[in-house]
Picture (tube, helix red, strand yellow):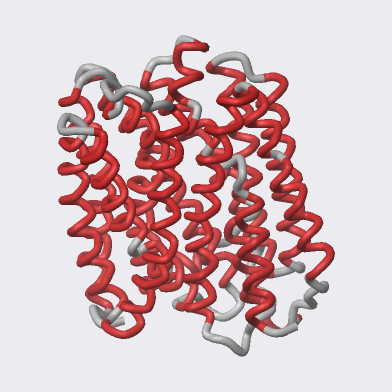
Length: 401
C-alpha cells in the first residue's frame, strides 16, 4: 500500500479513537454543579485521565518493539470503549468519575503512540518526520471533534449520551484498522536486547531526552488549556445573551482544529531552521500569550475567543517538532521504548497541569473571579517555561539539531 494511503488511514483512525477524549472537559460546566465538584476535584478528574495513560504506556507502547503494533492499538481501543461506557452507566460523582477516567486514559495510552508506530512501521521509505507531524496534528482535530460532538449531544440528549455516543469512535477505529491494514512482521534482528521495561538505553540518550523533558512542559500546558478552555469561555461569555455551552465548545473546537496545521507548519520550520531554535521561540511566545489570554476574559467574549485561539496555536506549534525530535533521535531497536518514555514523562505533565490550574482557581477566588483566571492561565503557561529550561539545559548537545 502507498505511504500516503497508510497515513490517511491512521490519521482517520486516530481521530475516531479520540471522540471521547474531551468529553469530560467539555461538560465541566454541567457536571460540576450536578456532582457538587470543586475546581480542584474537576482538575483531578481531568488530570487523572493521564494517570491511566501513564500506567498503560510503559507496557503497551514498549511492546511495539516486539510484536505487531496493530494488535496493541486494537487492545487500546477496546480499553477506551470500556472506559467510556463505564462513565456512561456507572459514573455518578467524583470517585466513580475518577475510576472511569483512568480506564479511558489507559485506552488512549494504548492508541496514541502505538498508532504512530503502526503508521511509521509501514512507511519506512518516506520522511518519518513529516508523517509524524500529520499524525500528531490529527490529535488536535480529534480533540476538536470531541469538544463539539460532546457539547452538542449533551445539549440535545444529556451528558450520559455524550459519553455513550463517543464510544462509537473507537469501535469504528477498530473496523478501519482491521479492514485496511495488513499484519506487520517485525525484523527479528532489530529486536531489543533488554527486557520489556528496561528503559536505561533511552535515558542515556541525551538528545532524545531533551525533547522528552521539554514535552513534559508542553503537555502540562496543552492539556491544562484543554481541560479548562470551556469553563473559561463560559465565564467570559456569562454576560452575553445567547452564549451557551455549545458556543463555548464550538470555540474550543475551532481552537483545537487550528492547532493541527500550525503543528505541521511548526515542524516544517524546524526542519528548515533547526528544531531546538524553533521550539524555543514558540515556547517564549506561548508563555507570554498565556497571561494575556487570562486577562482577555475581563474584556469581552470576543477578545477571549480570539486570544484563546491564538494561544492554542502557539501551544500546538511545537507539538509535532517535539515528538518527531524524540522519535528521530531514538536508538535502533528502541523507538517504541523511546516513545514510551516520551509519553510517560510527557503525560505526567498532562496529569499535573489541569490539577494545578484547578488549584490555582480555588485558591485565588474561583471561576467567577477574573483575577483567578489570570492566575490560572499563568499556571498553565508555566508549562512553556519548564520546556524552555529543559531545552536550554540539555540543548548543549546541539543547538542546531
